[in-house]
Image 1 (cartoon, rainbow, N blue to C red):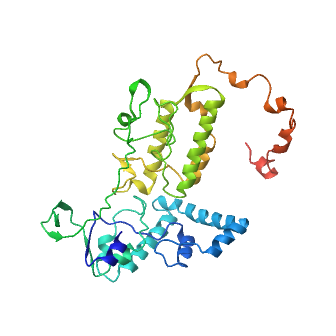
Image 2: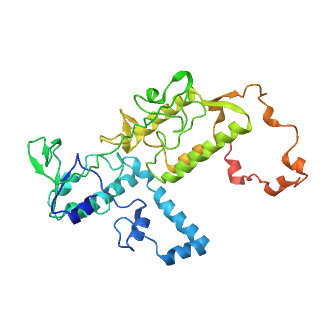
Image 3: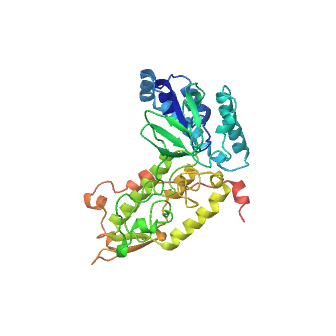
Length: 362
């Protein structure tokens, strides 16, 4: 908001709660190179010619997509303090902020946080640093005490006359349901998540059969593509629904032991990362990291690729044999007298290990 307000207002007071890391666009140099070709701040609109090439040259488009995704996924090692990647990334972010704020002496020192980048979500903030050094913008770190009809009153007693207030104060990241979600024996999800939200693999909760969540606790990405995680979650849920339908399952409910194991994994993973540094963050609720997947986006994809069905309890439909799904002995191809050798069309040969691999076997 600030760049747009700065261009249109005679005076802008920017109240902030503390410093934050304002970074280059996500996707490293690949994204930076694309943005440098356009005139939009933090965005790029592809030309008619570029979109035509994407459409007419699938191989080129695939190479372009793979390179972009690869650069996005390269950020993951930066989330571990003390690694070469983290130190290089932190230095680059510091230098970027310093050079953009140098025209206002002391502003960099005020804006620079005391925590490692990534403790809370990085802020690309296109145009923000450029706007905050302008003469009609004033940065104020003193907390707000109250608001009157025509002014903002700070805790130190200073009064700032204003015509309008634009709020960007965060959002509710507790994952608390916005409507009642009722499980077995009248249990509610809001009561279960009273202290902090948790769900097995981010998507399933004991006591709530046939209930799956997309975008639930611990589903966002710390490093990599968020779309990849969400696509993997949806793929997992589709497999679960297919299983319920195919095997005439009345209810499918994740075990408490599975959730306990997942919670233990979270508690072991996050202390190794920058996310537990001393910062306020929407990733955290009551001291627990509930916002992020415990690993890279690629890790989430591989984890969710093959569900552990043994982590669930199942209840068959009333009056149905649990093996009814086997059918009557005929497949559709048998009945249609169709392609009765279709399995040869999709045969997969297992990889044959090399002699070198075999020599390493115990």
